[in-house]
Image 1 (cartoon, rainbow, N blue to C red):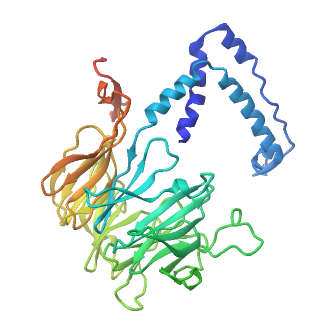
Image 2 (cartoon, helix red, strand yellow; image 1 turned 90 degrees about the vertical axis):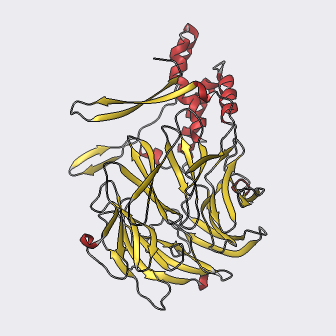
Image 3 (spheres, rainbow, N blue to C red; image 1 turned 90 degrees about the horizontal axis):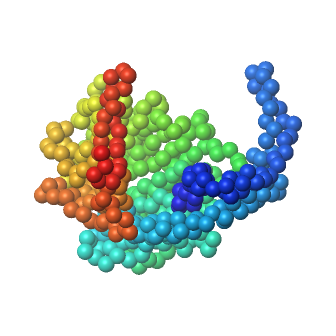
Length: 473
């Protein structure tokens, strides 16, 4: 939605340049911008004095800053209101953007779930249907969460039984979340409410789930400006109040680390991903099938990234850039910390970026990025490549969903000339079908995208895309 609102502003220099009229030029020169006063603010860094005369504008809660913003907006919108064809542009863009959009469906139990936007709704609505042919019904509509539209739906997971959905709500753009639970069949809202959640997954285990949170702020302190320290992982049992939740993981030696919990599909293992920044992951594992089993630290540094794809016996299949900048799939024993040299390479690194690996009917689907376009390949459990999933053309695949015991794969197919299409692929028949294709007021078939390569000075082949109307040389 932000990009749509900004479009007229981005077009402003172009429209002014293309108009070419004396009247427009005079109007542009007549613009009187508000005066922005300066203050005498100076900081010293490494014995060097640095002036910061507009420091006062950093206080976005002050009346003075609010008045400055109001004055700036008055100039901008007064100018925009005088563009004679602005409304025509707005009407045409609104008409083009006002079409039904769907997200990639995901499955749990007998039901499929997907997000849908009727056109220009502020937020997409979550739907559920039984099987592929059932009638969709609304499960969660985030547009109704707040009268002013400032609440949004965050993370969302379905219990293994398919009976419950746990979801987070963010309010007023804050990182803080609350977790709520709903019974899927009836739409009944449970009494569960978890507060002070931040940077968290929801990881189901039986009749409860793991989540990450901070301690509640002390009375009188600000939850928005206080420093967040001592992230923790808790386990919540449905029906309990939050004060009964069990503390599962913390580390008092590192107050600024974040801990994200996940469970394997069979709910046998609890995985704790540990982060200190936006890159680099440590990893610990706990066997939930053994009473009082300790956490096993598989990786205790932040030099690389790790994502567990599957567990099998005492083994984990892990997607990592350890020893492979373009990523590889490895197999390791989680019951003990072993050296990297002993990890088995299932899908070794190639010249192309391995973006993701998922399971489908006990096969691996590898999602590669080659020359900035997607390639999908099927591998057996030992890493032997069986075939490529043939895609209709140059594209970027997003949101691929598949499951170990299911033969169907769904993914979003994005191009430069049309809105995303959702495809369904059957791994048993090697058949690709359209699950959803939006209807739009634009002739996408009149345009095409070609990929060409430019040889740079050092001999590197640089991929480029040319998108244009068909027939243009």
